[in-house]
Image 1 (cartoon, rainbow, N blue to C red):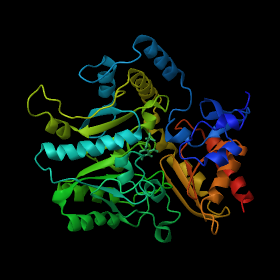
Image 2 (cartoon, protein in one colour):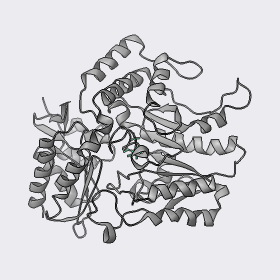
Image 3 (cartoon, rainbow, N blue to C red):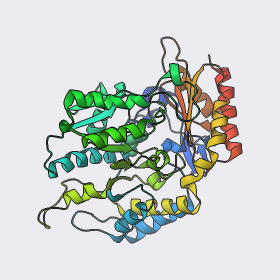
Image 4 (tube, rainbow, N blue to C red):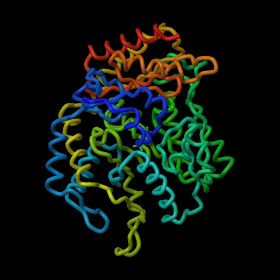
Length: 439
Ligand SMILES: Cc1ncc(COP(=O)(O)O)c(C=O)c1O
């Protein structure tokens, strides 16, 4: 494949990218299959990141490609405002087979960011339709990532994602994050210490009063800030406090949904049922943009009051339940269920944990975290150059044929759920080698 000139790379303003650095030395992916990408210069790369946490069943699954092609040739587009198409209803019914509890109503969107903003709007509107309109505050958490909409940015807790964009939504507050190196470094699986950090919600309730709080949103496992795990019992405690105070609990499962932890959703893994779940990414195996918001039936029912000809929720997207996305999602779900991928991470979790923690004594490593098929190797930041060491680890892994993701000074691993033992070994061997080359 002919590589583009530097000039030809200028027009595309790349997201979350150091554009000038990248364009001076681009990394271009040209095709993919199963566990692998091939770079534009023809090198095979083992994908240890499932693209961007989304290609759970591995790349270029024939069933998804065919379903998409057939759908495009049959019904390329159909609105879902005041009309519908059968596949949208079928997909919703299929999805609620794998959602926890009575989260059996589905609102379709096109991305994780849209799912989050939709969930926050549903939470606010829910209280209003129940005559509790004073519940307008939203509670997020430090170090959270909930996408890039104004709602998600507001409840998010990563400073660079927030500081450029003004005051954001009013009435938002944040729980403390749960990362504690001193007490929990190198925990295998969930850290023992820190369930009481959930009591921070009681502090915010004491400050604002529960009657002003609509919802709390958390990622059950924080991904983008470097894989931060909930201490044992933390999510249960958050659930109890929300219940006690009539506050909705939203789990942002954009990365944990569809098998990442060895259950369909983190809610089942932790045995904590939230009121609303946001999902995207693995929903279509990354093949077509799509997201979804799952709500408990009582939330949906609260809106289904008043005259039947009244629109109940003034919200939606041109591409909500796009037929092509629905076809991709149904085909992805077929694969996940047929091949047992929603639970496969559970059978790999122990050997994955063992493998990731074998890097404990590698140079620069200050913490290792793992859960399901997620791993994080945190490096000591270089003095006066935070993130530089991990970024170098990323580029060197790329040169050696392994695609990892870095965030801050953490290397995050989240391979497709079809990974085999030898591929786990290859990822760990390459990382070990790369860490030994780093200054
Ligand atoms: C937890 C979480 N929420 C929301 C998002 C945003 O999703 P998207 O990039 O599809 O808008 C992400 C993306 O990584 C995520 O990890």
